Length: 537
Image (cartoon, rainbow, N blue to C red; front, side, top):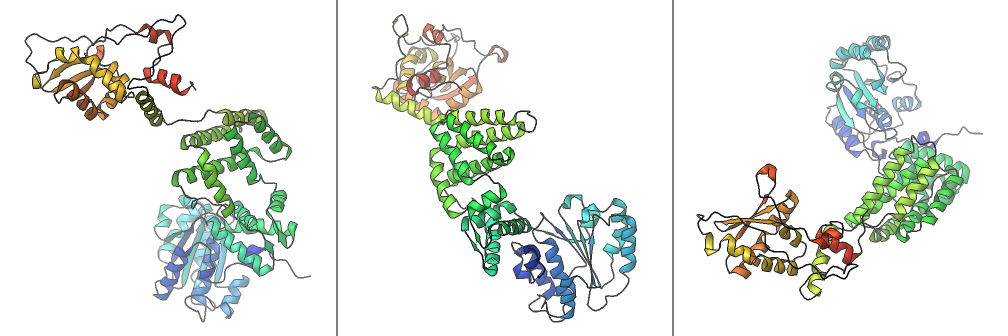
């Protein structure tokens, strides 16, 4: 029986073009060889399984190949065959994790003096170089800075941040990228074709996603799945083989959220528990699911979603039923659940409670949209905002409040346009009524403001907080237009945050008993409760 070779070794790239997802590295290396600008030391950094060691071996073969083709090794000469089979005296691969001491580096310094046996370069590939000790790095510095002309160092690491700056400054650094899901799926598709296997497209994407950016990890999953399924691989078999949470479970979750089916939520948790699934893996997948919905909602596209086309279409359709605010809240809830499961002694109970909370959570409403709707309601009722419902005693609605008291020195000059604070105060209720008719969202801020005076064509208004001040400034053109309509004079407006601490005017106006009986709600909040059925969260 012939010896079995795992996919990651059997289909290891033999040319630079075959390295998946790292074109920025392979193109630069080929150009360096074409222009005779090969450096004496390279540092390859990046996640696991993305081609660092493979590229290092390709570079070692290319610089020692007797007949390179377009800066690629021909893989047929004696030097290339020796390197491929791991028996070359000119290419030494060193594991930095197990050869990390200063003595090993001293031995390396001694060996670099000797010329290569057959090739042009003696290549040292040190994998996981960040594992070397501080003393070992220091022993390597001088040799790394001024090596013999026939020596080439290639360092590979998954943690570049742990490599000393003195080493980094002596190397050409290349950062290998996390491989995209589509690129991994294309690689697996080509391997399946070469092996004569039939694999569903959804199954390819599922294996690619399990790789999480690592081609080697995805190829290991590929070997495991083929061992179970044989020549015909389906998504259902993969879910069974790897005991994964099926994607349909996450779409089922959003269906429950949309319909408010808390009973179905408890049944979903029960299915996860009885299926033996890891709860944190479920939450990780749910976070990704909400992320995909958020991407589809905010961008109006599914290009940034790593999934098969059939699921991309479903994400685009599902995103229509949830708002951005809802999706952000759901993601925060999932993150909180994931953190809590690390410490709770009853993970099932916590997950059930949080799933029910996600499903029963009231849908979020945009504040701006609510204010616009209030304006529309006011306009539809004959130019007046909705009246508050009668109280238990059927008492009449409160009459308009009198204008705020104004204190002005008798010696003060008359303001711009012949309008003084007294005249404006006498028509203040008329001004407020016009604002209520046309923009009820602004009316509460002005109704609660104190008229401080009129100076050089500017109406000074005392307000209680910065929010009211910003709202008035945002609508200053509208306020000026209403004042011009009533007084036939164009005036500006300047809000001032009032209060005893700032030396401003203290509002001593009477309180509306109707508002007091309703618990003191802000007028906008009261209107939202009355007209839109809003409830406190």
